[in-house]
Image (cartoon, rainbow, N blue to C red; front, side, top):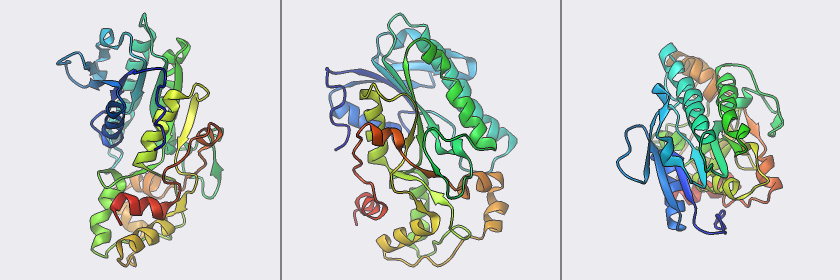
Length: 308
């Protein structure tokens, strides 16, 4: 399993925000199973030595509880799913930008700082780019999500200025039966009511949950990785290909496409910038530093995830 060489110099203490989310819970399981200590960064007052109280809306965190941690993985953020009202968009931005700023400033103030901060970002950084192959050096796109991602990554600057190695994990579509987009799609596809979105030509850069966790662990233990890191399979697919493969794995038809106008009517801007954006990622940093994907190809990945 990729990432098994985690912190070979001995057990580490790793602070994790978003530790109860899809990626965070799987990461915590892997860290604990490997003999490492986890401190959960929680949006409340800490209840013991393995929690760090964090109140990003108030600009506060229990910084003393972060003294001496070896690494921090910051995954917390408001879900982008649902209709983007003004209030929803503000929550999406603030939960990422302000939360990251509070955490980065706290880490910079410590007497014993962590070696590395892996802070989540998203493939939304690149915007809608058609068939363009995008690596970490590609310019940002235009729109709400790219701007949020730019500010999100910039918010970690206090940690970088304090000589903490900072990695921005630009996450692709994380596939798991436990949550996320795939879990939401499964009931519809199992009924034989699934289908592509519009013409299905937009690129979906995906990654199995196991590899998303493996990539974060690889970043923690690889000093050569800093700055942006695309977290996606080396083999992205179009939405049309994705739906065909998922239907084949489930042994169900997928012949009911979702018209673009219907998605726009239901979800508005979220559909335009989220569901219908075409982002074709290349995981350049992971490839250059020797990360070995457990699930590089979609069909075997889906069969492993779904037990098919």
